Image (tube, rainbow over all chains, first blue to last red; front, side):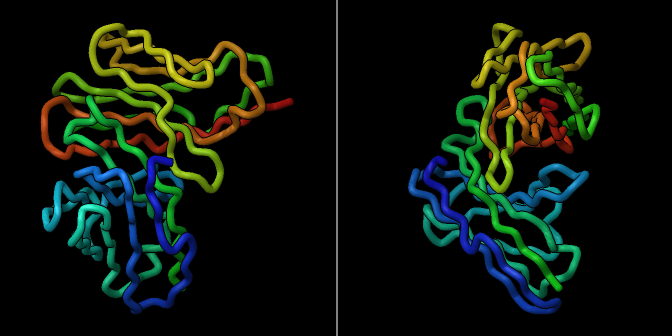
Length: 115
Length: 115
């Protein structure tokens, strides 16, 4: 893996509780992404970041927020977890804006279960 | 907006047989196209990519893909399947140009190798 660590790897939480997932990279890459993977849907972009304190929404951002206070860390927060947010969450990084020059590199994922 | 369609959520082939995984894309601008592989409990790993130039692209593990603009396709092939090829395969598209575009993924194809 390209120096990407996701934590925790597994988490079970109850409906209505807040949850924060962490992505840490050692590549000093500017661009970071959060995807969720669900059967029959492939991977869908939740939020992405193009620099410290610079973030934007992806395709399925409702119910999620992100923060990036340092280049190496990108946090994904579920303010009040719901069962529909049970999923596998992947962090990805890229050195450049366009995938032409720098394809995404993925972490190993966080499996989140909301009961 | 771009999109990707992968034909067949599951493909089963015998060991030693040809592997063909189908991908069709939709994009209003020249696309960049990618194939990723995901082994169980792991993140996604880049197999190959098409950006510009030669339309037949060779990747890792003996896989290759051909970009056919007239057919809007980017099918993945391997002449002889190996048991270790069993995995989930994702086709993805990105539009050209700048910006943190991320990738748009297909829903994935699960490749099963029969002994």
